[in-house]
Figure (cartoon, rainbow, N blue to C red):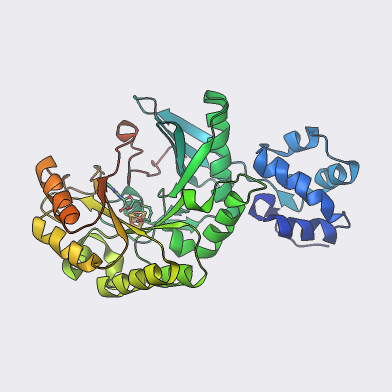
Length: 360
Ligand code: SAH
Ligand code: SF4
C-alpha cells in the first residue's frame, strides 16, 4: 500500500485498537495488553513497548508497524520546560508536540489530591480580552492523543516526585476552548476515563467552556457524564460582550437558555466561572443581575481573581468588592466560592498559559 499518513496509537479507544490489530491479521485479544501498556502503565515510547513482555505476535506487530516511517506513531510530547512554583505545589510544563507547536499543562497539588489542567487547542479562537491564550489567537486543534499524552506526562512526573500518588482530577481549563474541538475532546475523555486505562472517573473531570451554545446542547443530548463549567464574566449582554467577544455570536440570553435546558435534561449542577475585574463586572448590581439569571437553576458560582496578562490592563477586584459580590450571591441562595490561587509566580494561573515566543 502506498500513500498513508501515520496515525497516533494514542488517538484510539480500545475497541478501535482491536479493529486495527484484526485488520493486520493479529488476534484482537492482544489489544488489551497493548492498551494497558499505553494507558494504565503509560509507557513512554516504542523502546519501552518493545522491552515489555508482550506475546510474540503483538511484539512483531509493534516492531513492524509502530515507529518512524511506519503506519503508527506514539504521542510523546517533549518537555521543553518544567517550572515549579515557589510554594512547590504547582508545576507547569511546556510541552512540544510532533509538529513543533507547544502547549501547556499544569499539575496542581491540593490537600491529598492532584489535579491536572489540560490544554485542548494550541491557542484559542475566542479572543476573551483578559486571557493570555485568547490574546495569542488560534493555532490549531489538538488530536485526542495529544490531549491524552498531557495526562501521561503529568502522571509520570507525579510518580517520580511522590511515588504512590495519583492524578485524581482533571480540568479542561488550559489553552483552548474544549467545545470548539468537540470530537477530539470527547474521544480523549473517553480514553482517559476508561477504567482499563488511566481511569479518572467522569465525575472528576470538568469541561470548562466560554459558552459555545451548540456544544452545550450537544453535551445535553449525548448525556454528558462530565462536570460542566461555563465561563460567564458578565450578567448583561453589554457587560459580557466587552470581555467575551464570542457572546455576540452566542448571546447571553441564548447561553442561559442552553444552560437551563442542560440542567433540566441532565439533572446536573452547572459551575459558573466569573473572573472578577475591578470596575468591569464586580458591582453588587451585577451580582444581583447574575443571581436573577441563575434563578431556579442548580448552579455554583466560582469566583476567580483576575490574573495579570501582558495584553490586558484591567485590575483584579478589591477584596472588599469581591466579598460583597460573593455575599449577594450567597444571600440569593447560590453556593459561591473563590477559586484557590495557584502558580501565579510561574504564570500558570488561570488565563496565563501562553506560548512564549522564541522558546519553541
Ligand atoms: N476556554 C475555556 C477553558 C479555558 S480558560 C473557558 O474559557 O472556559 C479557563 C478559565 O480561566 C476560564 O474561566 C477563563 O475565563 C479563566 N481566565 C482566563 N484568563 C484569565 C485571567 N487572566 N485571570 C483569571 N481567569 C482567567
Ligand atoms: Fe479561549 Fe477560554 Fe481564554 Fe476565552 S478564556 S480566550 S475561551 S481559553
